[in-house]
Image 1 (cartoon, one colour):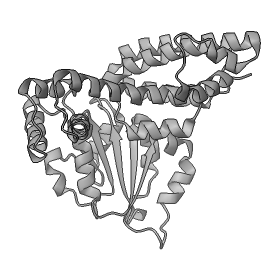
Image 2 (cartoon, rainbow, N blue to C red):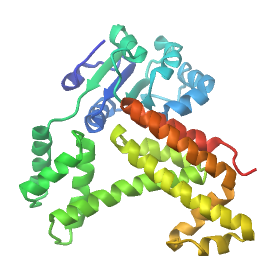
Image 3 (cartoon, helix red, strand yellow):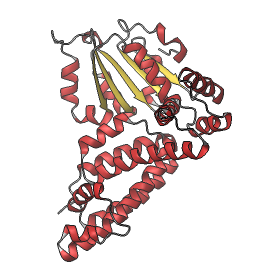
Length: 330
């Protein structure tokens, strides 16, 4: 059953227990999700990878009713057609107070997940399309006026154009601007570009650092908390390649002298003190041979992502999670 995003209030969550949100507008998805779950207290968020890894436990937990769990909501992020078999095994009649909301990127018409939900009489699918620049400008102006923040139209246009039709990304940038202006600081184009670029790069850097350190739990948390888009894919891969080559040099140095502190001190440019601990983890997790293989695989995944740009963020997310699981230090 198809429901338009502006008709979200028509969804009766007592009747429809599995809802699929798909498309590029993460901010609008979040607004609609919050509208559906505003009176629900227990919310659990998973990636597709997590629920499929533990599918039996997942099905058992939602197909059984607990006296201590009421108004439970389960969010599943980054869904693809791979999730369909698991969804079909869920007994909707046993969900009762449980609501499942599934988030997916763009789903083509040939997508089995999309077509199944569109034809379903018991599940709901909601498409989300990018906001127009006019819509984003109206939303931004309302935000700025409510907080009495002055910003030129040209700088507002920079923010709107940067965020590619996604209100969530826009509001993230606006909140950073609000924080910046609390001490009376003025906003100009240079400040806007600095604030937005630093935050975007930090999220990606944190993701790659934890992948190379094989901190799977942290990786999944970062992926769930950030709305990386297909447009971010190439930047993620380029950051991954840059850091992998850096770790390769450090690992080769470590294999020569068997002294991890000496290897780190030899780095050019120098490694900042706060990054030294995670860099040690990265060096210890990889051999020079395996990091070389990773670099080769990254070049291949970049070609694959460019050929499948509509699904590139899912391809790269799966690749990153898989790398965090692999054994590479022997």
